Length: 331
Image (cartoon, rainbow, N blue to C red; front, side, top):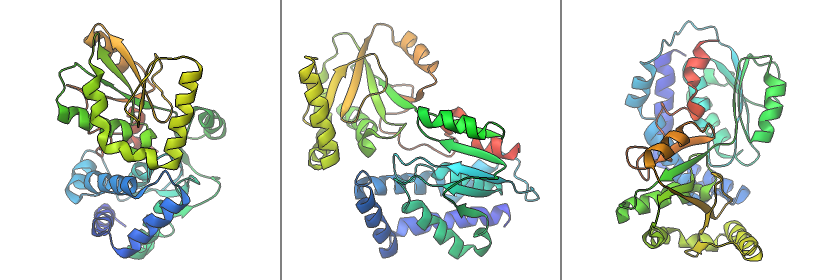
């Protein structure tokens, strides 16, 4: 398959997802039954983001135009370890390898082993020659390079196993927001999306906000009404109740809007159902400090990533700031 063919296949995949036919609906239902964190709401959200940002033909052509993609490339076998925190989170790595012309061996997360295999199956139906270029495996052995995503503990093992080979190893990351206090109601509602989408499980989810002294939290807390149904989700509700009990037991001050616990804390990572906050005195110095923190995926706020857009990365939004396609073309 040449580059044009590969782009065409991805565009066809985008059209398939947009149609949302009965076959895809059944697959989504199966994924939800297997992993309750993958609700229909959030599978659809992930599907829409992938379709609009990654599988638009014009965007794919523009993305590829920034690289020297040679159809005469000698294919290498790239091992991909995918995470499973949100639906199809490994799709960009999969897409990058596919577009590059390399072959790939994919180790799926047990939390997300329904959606990606179906997409790979459909690609094989449309492009028979891709069947031996995309392999799903339980173990990764004999690959020429590796892209592995997981937690900090997993990364220690990845570095040990894959250190002899070219690799990209991704650790825990999270996102933050910086507020001025002059945000509109609409901006605060959009920020609520950045915080609560996927139950806050993604690396692009905001887990901490920075606010000026004397910030009025009431409008902020009132902006989460569209997520009140989270308390009906048993896994999320269990986390909320557990975190609330910890706060009460330790006599820690908190604020709540019935679906989120707001706690003052220096840490940028927060548990499910909890959002940390910190007061700042100098906005510019705070942003400068945050930009130096390699555990932060993105910063949401005025003159940063727009409110409500943290979960809509484009093709050039590489995790950890490492250009995956450039890495693949250097092999």
